[in-house]
Image (cartoon, rainbow, N blue to C red; front, side, top):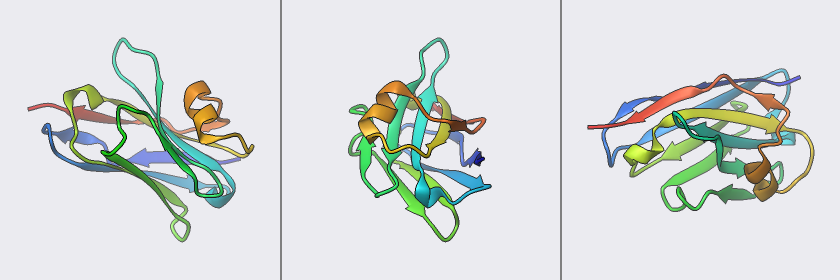
Length: 126
């Protein structure tokens, strides 16, 4: 069983940056694929980024070149560095973990992950 806790959300101006953290307990994240998903008000949840257990990364087209996912094994934490933020990035961001070995693209498109955090709100507004 993996417990995930997101942090780092907040209010930021357009063009600004935030770094989200996904801290895990109960198991070592190295064995899991970790995904970041977001859900804006009135919209469906969408996959943002994923890092698989072997370190491969995938990104939604809307965030490529602006967001970077990374893993710190010593801290058992996965980060999402978000730069050049836009108002359309406003959403609740969730991290999720899964111990199977599907591709990052599969996880992002299906959201088929077993463990989920409760989310952190990111608001991009002037």
